[in-house]
Length: 255
Length: 255
Image 1 (spheres, rainbow over the protein chains, first blue to last red):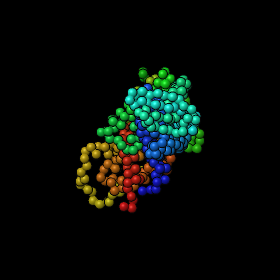
Image 2: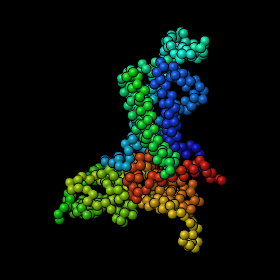
Image 3: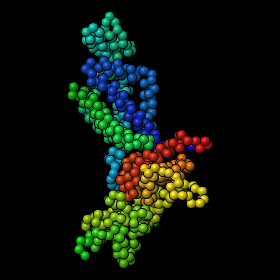
Image 4: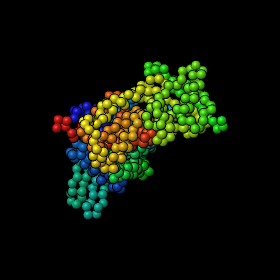
């Protein structure tokens, strides 16, 4: 009935933007976790490096990834706008204020979100930036297709002319950037491991409120599927997924 | 009289809407546990008048839990610690002798303090005026039950309509958001056949007025539901979101 800009500058419109970007980021977590499970494969990183190359070079995925980066920015910027607006709505604070009826997470989404934003910035500069423009080591895998045995050799930058994957005389040869080694090296630092684990704890608390809240915002509130939404929000998004991610730095630290 | 209570009250005193307020401490004894909270304040005020001091200003009217006037923040909870109870229906037996009770006005930019604990809640009236009504032709009196309404729908509409516009949801919300109130009003008409004609204009008009008044946005902490003396459910907020998004994205005024 009214134009788009006025719709999205209303309190409900802004809520909708938080909700949609938030849910999109949630869906990304599933893909990211499943792909990164390749890290646990005991193959010197062959599967993971192939996956990393695929994710950074397959056009549809690249398009989605830019949508993802913009979602992170929009979600953060709108959170800031909403928080400022909400602070203005109560200029004089209460001397005493109970939190009765609400969970701690729901009242501290801003703090949790800030931790997550710091984490994302650090995470992307550690791996995403390094992989694209940094000094990543290179690796060559030679898999004998008859015996299934793989020989892994590190190669110099001069021997690397781009990602290749071909079969020659029954031997599958893969040359790629060795992000796996990068990951394995980084996660030997205890403070980084601790930071990652704490960030996943923050994500757990962020999503225990955020996931079900998004559906409330959409108005998808029905006695039939609300228990399912709550179940997924708690067990999948605030327990299973953060645990899966937190296991990665811990795995490499203790490996 | 035995079993009477001694209390320390920390009361917000503010001369007028422009003055800066402060807490003033009053000691009171001889409070019967059977008094209502407002009667306790009456006793304190009598003492103040006898001492030629300005009595504490607070709103009250019916003292039966139905008018929604007695808006007091008691120890950080709107209408005090008892569930589904207005301040006037709260009895001093809910406290212990020796307690310190902090009493504050509702704090919201849309509820300017008139004096002490009394706030101006006409912003809620203006939201009602924006769309919280049904336009009807003034003909003869229609027969009762002429329009069939399923029992479950009627019940739900009546539950939403029990809102007494006291503003406790705004007071309880960390963002001073009025969405529980607005959603209850939007819901009671959206559910009933009589409300259909103006259904979508209403949702937009009331939400816009809510934003104009300066209320904060909802972040689904659900504290409003816990503190509402009439136990209005947050499912109303989900319904209002549906109404609003339907109106904004799916309906065309010109059609």
